[in-house]
Amino acid sequence: MSGFFHNMLTSFRRELSHMVHHRMYRMLAIVLPVISFAFFAVMFDNGSIRKLPVAMLDQDDTPLSRKLSTMIGETPGVLIAYDISDMDEGERLMRKGVVSGIVQIPDGFEREIYGNEQTHVEAYISGANISVNGMLAKDIQTAVQTFTAGVQLTKLQAAGLTSYQAMAQIMPIRFSKHVISNPYLNYGYYLAPIFMFMMLMIFTVLTTVYAIGRELRYSTAGEWLDSASGDMTAALLGKTLPITMIMFILSQVMFLIMFRGVGVPLNGSFWVLLAGIVLFIVSYQAISVFIISVLGNLRLGLSIGGGYSVLAFTFSGLTFPIMAMYPVMQYLSKIFPFTYFTEIFIDQAMRGAPAVYSTMPIVCMAAFVVLPILVMPRLKRLATDSKYWGKL
Image 1 (cartoon, one colour):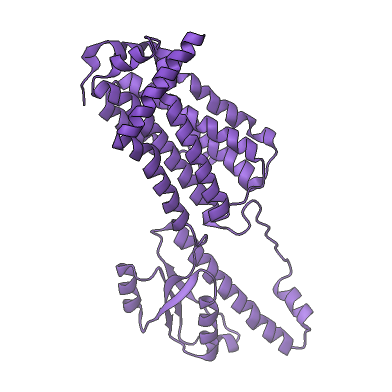
Image 2: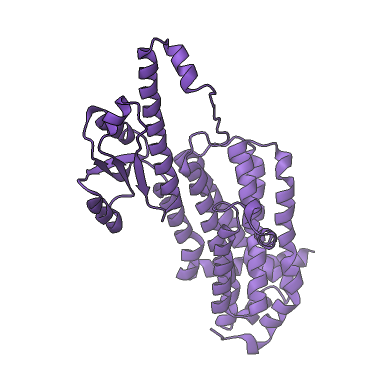
């Protein structure tokens, strides 16, 4: 056993030397991950969507219509950026992408309200961006409903009802909404960490594939194996351990940015999250070893590894719920450790769930660690047979 650790340590030292002397290695393992963490922290600094530009077409131009226009503009998500004279002008602004919506208050709006007639307000909202569409629709509808309730309240009080009686008629059933886990509806708490995890995942995969693939590309695989006295397991552990350590340190930098900088809440166990991030890193290293061992080609390994990493976000359920996917897609989501880790993060950071709830995702991530065992003979053959060396 002492010989095994000696061989692993020799491979470990050799890998550290490569990290120091190869600029691409340093970029993939350190520089680019830190830059990406800072980028997403700054991107989601505002936390929520605020003041989306909207054009207002007030064809009535009366005190009531102006009051409604003001109420719409005072909602968190709406900014009345343009007062337009006709729909053609609004359409031009929307086609240019200058505004995200148009609100039209028709002529006769005040007259119809005072005449106890039904009137209407039109909102034209761009559906190109689902988040923008939902935010504008919700805020405009809330403002119109509040305005309508105010008009009805005034009428009922003028008819002799008390404010309590009037409110009971306007809202016979009161609906209370309680948002748990992320009550502030803050995008920074939800998306910034997920994108940081994705960057950590991508650079873990690329760095690991590059570390092994460059040995084949530059025909140094034999030297790498010789540094561990021909022990492929010791050589592989010695090569991947420095990457594991660096990515773990980067994960702690990421947590610092996330919890201290962005202000993401931590309602559960940090130790479960810590165990999860270690398995997250190691599982993606295992997948990377599997990919480069099967392909035996640096360029193709980087392409497939990068593509596999990017797909993980699609199948994580963050943009489209996994439970709403077709059954085959639900099964496909299980081949990505990213899916399990995001579940751990949401449970521990956002929901504050008991640690036992994260047991199964941790076990599922741990299952990926066995992948290198399946390809160890293939990897040793790549490292000993020169016909696999020197390929792009």
